[in-house]
Length: 220
Image 1 (cartoon, rainbow, N blue to C red):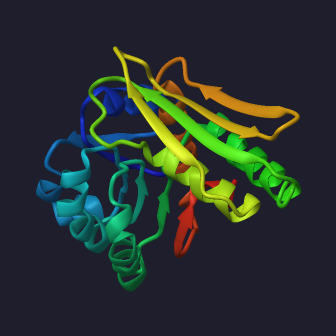
Image 2 (spheres, rainbow, N blue to C red):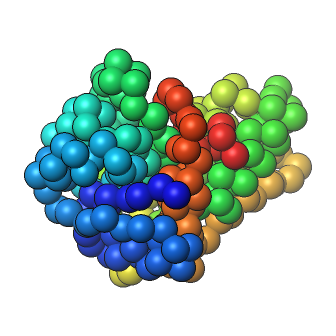
């Protein structure tokens, strides 16, 4: 049975704690300062990180060097991704990361990948809209960026991404593929962040016996 340390103890941290409890997975501690976790504790635990972009940028080296494995749901670090992934690879620490750990969103990734490839060269113009709560710092969201990359890879056209920040919206992502004669629309709407917590715990369980660095969607 895995043991977990949560990095970041805000709303997502509490939801992850609840999901761990439902599954009977031990939570060793939850910390806003992951670098203060004793080395002997870290060596026995999977770190689940849902913090702010600036916090993860400061902490990823410590996580890679000290923890048994890591699950990272923090977004906003695409520009330093090569350094982050190399840090985990060099340390030999398994890493599962995702722009969105929702199982439904990862199904959306798969669908958009498939359809974009089918429609390449057929005259479709893509666009993406994403809406989140007003507390989300990065825009566009990591999920929207991932969707854009998948559409561009399949369709051969880079989509325009439009971001909205409203109230307490957990997250809505819509991919639109429009031609002169028809339109396809794919939407995922999260009712709460609980879907992210469930996926993150599923990912933590996947770290058992895992080696290397992986995107969650690839493992699914």
